[in-house]
Image (cartoon, rainbow, N blue to C red):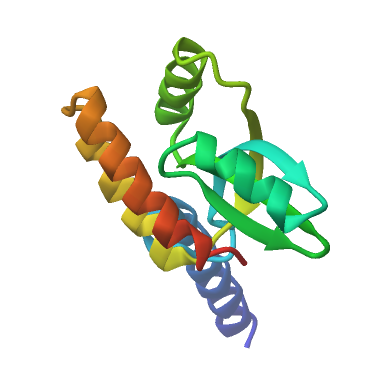
Length: 145
């Protein structure tokens, strides 16, 4: 009886340990509850009226306006990885744009698409970048959580 109990305890501890190690190692690949799908959105302003937000959005090609409660936020870019966040900040500074990075939660589908797009940005020129950024922002509008 004592041997059986010791074997059961050892088997339980071994199984629990291996399960923990497996989940810990695979958490990045499985998109489990640790991954909140956070991205950095670059905002150029928050406005109380839709007209004011629209006027500012017209000044920046490919920008989008999203209603957030009673406010309207104007976004000009979105990034997921640290390297791309830094690249976008540099790009906006070079264009003399005052942007405010804001962390927002998005759907997992958009998060995965954004990661695929970011690999394209590394090999594009500025004109192509602006087109891709516009397409990403259009998708971003419907993907906030």
